[in-house]
Amino acid sequence: MIRKILVIGLLCLFTTPAIAAECKATVESTDAMQFKTGALVVPAACKQFAITLKHTGKLPRNVMGHNLVLGRTVDVGAINADGMKAGLANQYVKPGDARVLAASKVIGGGESTTVNIPVGKLKAGESYTYFCSFPGHAALMKGTLSVGK
Image (cartoon, rainbow, N blue to C red; front, side):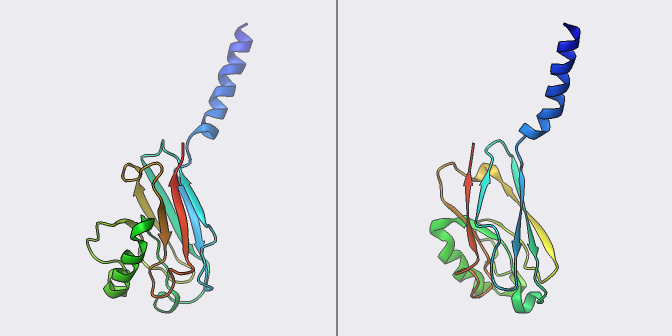
């Protein structure tokens, strides 16, 4: 009987990490203006969700820079237009834009950056889009983000 309890206890000990919510993801970007990940699901159990943006290309940030900006899908067009006006000095994100839920810095080939998203700002059932706001990139470089269970 004690042996069974020990075995069950050990099984629980070793399976607990596998059950825990994965509160991070990596999105790769290329010199061909693409995100290699088109959809992310954020576990509702996460307090923060970290997205690491990795630029797998070789071109510098002023030529083929990429960032990752998150907003409600209905706001993406306006966020992107205002971001382009803000310029590279502002990471192509309008300073203080309340529609932006999270934004990374602009990176070039071989670089990476991480952006943390407070999951409390997200609502289940709401439509969110992450995109690159470097001028001309948002049409191709975008993906969906949703809150899962």
